[in-house]
Length: 110
Picture 1 (cartoon, rainbow, N blue to C red):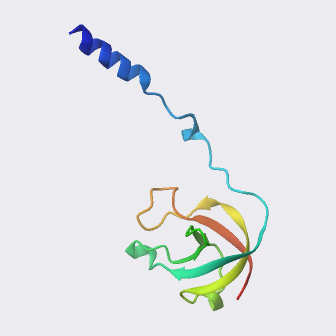
Picture 2: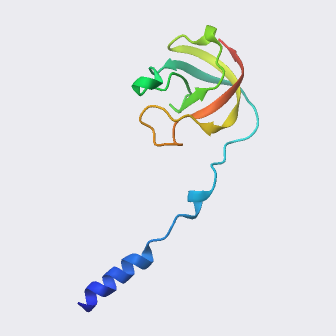
């Protein structure tokens, strides 16, 4: 009986809240110029897609806040100048606030 109490006490004391849980996520600052990316249509948000996304060379998905309609062509290679908007887009099957980072597009070229 004593061992069960000690194990329970040990488990209770070993659990602690992560200090970073309440802190806001920090996004990189500054302007990123002419970053090569691929434009992808992942499907409508209503059907668990993320709409139009930009994918970098490391296969990281981003949600463009203001991508011009003329660049919304699936599998198009582009060079993007952007800033992080400081939020994430909750879409698809992503955990809330863990979806693709939102980018404020400053310029796009092929």
